[in-house]
Length: 288
Image (cartoon, rainbow, N blue to C red; front, side, top):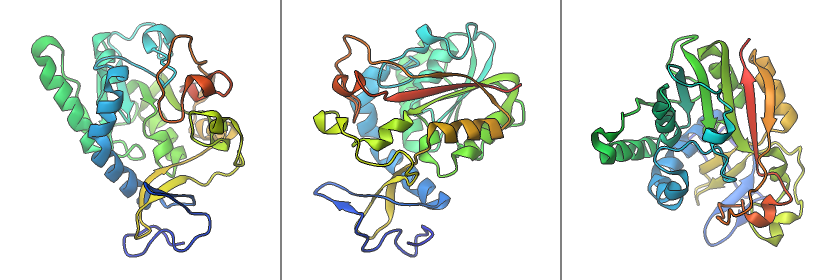
C-alpha cells in the first residue's frame, strides 16, 4: 500500500478487496491527503443525487441530526436559547441546519469541504428570495477552519466532516479552538457499533461480521486503485479520548431510538435495524 498520492494506487492486488458490478471496496488505511481528495471529489460528484434523494427528508431549513429523524427543535442539544449566538456548522452540506439556526435568531455560518454541496445551499437560498436571510457559506477543510480563536458560541455538525477525515482528533481540536469558553461542540456520527455489521437495511445487516476494534476505514476506489470515497471508524472510547484531549468535556451522549411511524430507509438505516441496533451517536461537549 502507498501513501495515497496521485502517482501510485492506494491498493494493489489485495485479497481483502470486494469487487462487484457497481463499486470496489476495502477496509484499508488511507492517508489524510488521499481521504481529502477522495471525499471532496465524491461529494462534488454526488451532491445532486444526494440532495435529490434526501432533500425532502432534510427540508430546506430544518435541523435533523440523523436518519432517525431527531429534530433539534425538539432535542435542544445546542441549548434552549439560540438568539444572538454565533454558530458554526461544520460539514453543512446544503446548509439546512444553518438555515434553521438563522431562523432561531442565531448568527450562523455554514462550512463544507464540497463546493457541490454548497452550490445546493445557494440554490435553496435563491429559491427563497427575500423570504429568508441567506447564511454565509465557507468552503473549508474541517481540520483547518479559517476562523479566529474563540469566535463562536456553538459549533455543530450533523453527520458532517467527522467521519470523513483521517484525523478526526484534529477536528476536535479545531472545534475547541474556535469555541468561546463555555461554548458547545455537538456532532452526530454513525454509531460505532454499526461498524461491526454489514451496511444493509435488511436481515443481512443484523448479523455482526467485523471486529468493532478494526479501525481501518471503509474505502471505495476506482480501477486504478485510487480512493474515490472514504469513511473512518472510531470506537466510543476513541471519540471520548479525542474530545477530552482537545480540552472539551462530554456532557451527554445521545443514542436516538428509531421512532414509531418512520418508514424511510436511508442506506443501512431502516425500521428493521433501528429497532435493535443503535444507528447514531450524538456527542454533546462543552469547552470549560
